Amino acid sequence: QRRNINCHDSERVIDIKANWIRKSNMALIFVCFIVILFFAIDSMLAQETEEGESSDESTMNIKLLYLGPDGNTYLTEYREIAKYGNTTDQAKIALLELIRGPISMTNLVPTIPKGTQIRELFIDRKQCAYVDFSREITQNHMGGVTAELSTISSIVNTLTANFPKDIHKVRILVNGKE
Image (tube, rainbow, N blue to C red):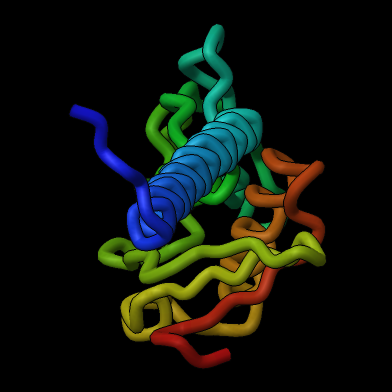
C-alpha cells in the first residue's frame, strides 16, 4: 500500500529539518564559545605565569635596606625567599621580610616598627607601587624626621632595587590614607 504525500506532510518535513538545523547551529555556536573561552583562560594563565613564578627557579635573592649602626648609612642584608606568585606577591614578601627586621647582621637597625602589617599592595600601569600599611607603622614608630625618612627610604629602595622592571615609584598609605 502506497501512501500519498500531500502538501501538509511536506511542510511538516521542512519544519522538522529547519528545527533540526536551528538546533544544530545553536549547538555549534555553543561549542565555539566553549573553545574560545578555554583558549582565553589558557592565555590568561600563561600570562600570569610569565609575570610570576618561573618554572625552573623556586627562590629569589632580595636586598633589604636597613640603617647601619651609625644611624646615617644604609646597609644591605640579603635574603633568599620563595619565589611565589607575581611581582605584587613577591613585593609583599620582600616588605614582610623588611618588617621582620635584620637577622644575619646584628648591628643593623630596623626601620619599620614591629607589629606593622601590610594591608594591601598593588602596582599600577605606570609602575607605581601603592603600599597600604596598618596604623602600627605610625603608632609604634620611634618618631623624628630622620627616623621617618629612614623608614620611607628603606621601603622605597627595597622595592625599587628588587623589582626594577616593575616598580619605579612608591606611594605609602597608612590605613588607606596618604
